[in-house]
Image (cartoon, rainbow, N blue to C red; front, top):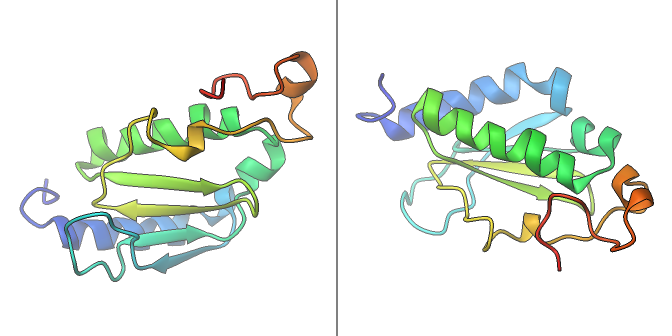
Length: 138
């Protein structure tokens, strides 16, 4: 696999292919620069922005986003493609940023896991706690 010897090239290729082939599932996607917290410094083309995620919007649930999309997708890219990706959903506007070559945050440090249920969340209607089942909100 060329991901290890050529990580930037593979990250850019994966970002391009993701943006071109996944619109049917996620909605409009654009190749962007990655948001980075460390190396690499040349980040052009290493990000994908999903303008309004259909999956998140239709499910209306942060827990479904985390457990059925974010975590499995990050694991897939790491284990099967050999490339780290950090996904950052925005629960306010239903967008999502994929940052390739960035390791996912630990769930205890990831703000995506610390979120209250959406008003339309089916889990909230069953839960008296008000937080989304499967997230780490106290």
